[in-house]
Length: 494
Ligand code: GLC
Image 1 (cartoon, rainbow, N blue to C red):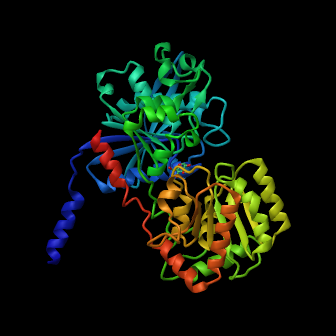
Image 2: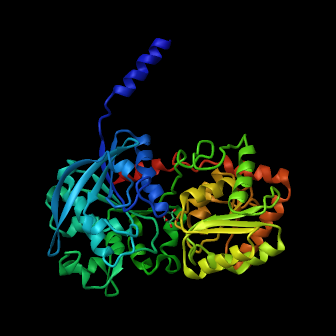
């Protein structure tokens, strides 16, 4: 019996799987190399989950070689070669490096003029040129990486020129056969620029202007919605919402005209990266059956943040960009009142808009024993917050998927969310028929957020009932198990 098992194991590990499909996954950020938000989480985990689901798919990822990609990875990069990429009148150096990580082959596009920058990945005057270069390079380096994909799967506007270039930039027949998928992680960001960039920067002929034109501007994301073979957003509700004026940031008519190729697939969470039982970053590990660790984490978080150390005070938390779209107008309008009226503490981490940064600086100074918001993004502080907090607030006005409510649940922090996009698809109110897994409200108004926080705090005061709620949220499955398959279906249906 033992012998047979052994032989079988050996066979499966040494067996070469015949490749049925080749996918090139293109992104402007991916964990663990570089990250500014949820995009990196998804781009770092989806390819390996797809591969896990179907090992016959050869899926590889390509990203820019930013200067902030840590040396611990770089030192093992393999240089594959270089070419010169034509972008309008420019001829730019483009080197390619290769690196294997968690079973996925990664490629890095190197050009120091574009990617060796001081202040992170985005936000430069020449972003259109930087990401046009990146997109053109991805197509032009295929011979160097020796990989002619069946599908190129691009993410967000930074990679969205690829489907358009494949159609209009005069590539030979074999490139025309490549199918393309555009993933929209957030339609608020479109890569919209002045009309003059079409020829001079993107190097696209005037006769194709209508593909990218939006009210006289060049809109890179719009071009891809038109030229890609399939468009995927990161939750089913968001796929419906971006057909509306309210959520589409000016693109609703284009989305509706292309609705036939649009689907919504819910993001999953990387359950290895976000695992309170093994997470090296948090103070103490814990799981649903060993919650002493969570109590300890709360105490240590209160200590580290200089708050009153008190196990009975509920900690309300957020780890988020701090801006209007994330609902911080609502938070700002009620949180001070709640801190003074209810016996609660508020902790948070994130970077954001001046108005809110000033507001939280004021709260930190006025209520040092009860409020500590760490300004500036830090994943480490974020994870410590998840590990010790009790209630998570996410009152977004619009939220394509949202990952924080999933991380919060996994770390035993009960979420309060506004019913929009992926928040609506993942969190149901405890009052729902059949039971729920959080507190939800429909309208983006202060009173409704305030009421939800009051409800959660009142429930927290009943320790037995609360422990049940925490158990409920911690035992849900938000991994890619359920949804990676839907990506496979999308690949197969192309
Ligand atoms: C963007 C969206 C967020 C989504 C993430 C990953 O950051 O704003 O809702 O979860 O992308 O798809």
